[in-house]
Length: 294
Ligand SMILES: [Zn+2]
Image 1 (cartoon, rainbow, N blue to C red):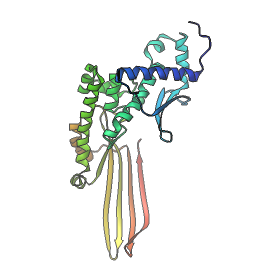
Image 2: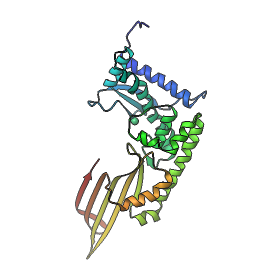
Image 3: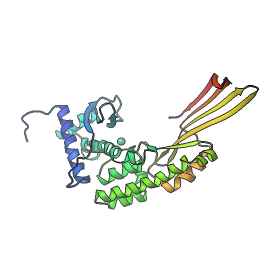
Image 4: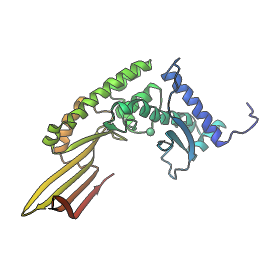
């Protein structure tokens, strides 16, 4: 078919986005009078200056807008694909612009639909989050992250693959999130914090399918009050929950991992020296060490 006018690069993106929004709306909210997303959405071309990133999802908090960024290289490839000027690999096996947009839209959708249900666990739309991967599977989306192989081993994947109605998937995910919620409730109890001598927090995982020891912040206070020195310790750490970790495994896994030799990816240790004078704390000096393996 001959087109009267060549589409601009932005028009190609906008059109592809519109098409994907339509597809997902039909897949998820079939015959319902609601749109896929509440917030505005914008798509733009970006030169990422590396060949690894094909697309990226971000949230523009200032404008309450989902932003999908597509690499210039992928857009070039898509245009070449349209003109059939690509090799068979790119034509059939690489992620197409449609695949990338679908993937990024699922990031947006999962945030809107599920993050508020368990605000205690951040990054619900992360690439190795079981919630993200389940919705992605349901809409026949793709990902080029390695965690997909691990996810395909899970019972969750096998169940999700059988689901044809989004309402059933939604019910399943809510039930799953309630199970994670029990875990965060357990770790927020004062007794638990005291017993483990640490606050324990969680995010869903960006890459790893397992339970990842992510960050730890520790502060030792040495406070001189009159003749005496009072020692106090404050500790908080964060674990990333990957797609292969079942909620019922987490409590034991965390306890085991707090004791084993595996390092946190990022660790900060601080010693604060202070005195108390007239009931006010004056910091004399601080000593901070950072171990960064991120
Ligand atoms: Zn992603």
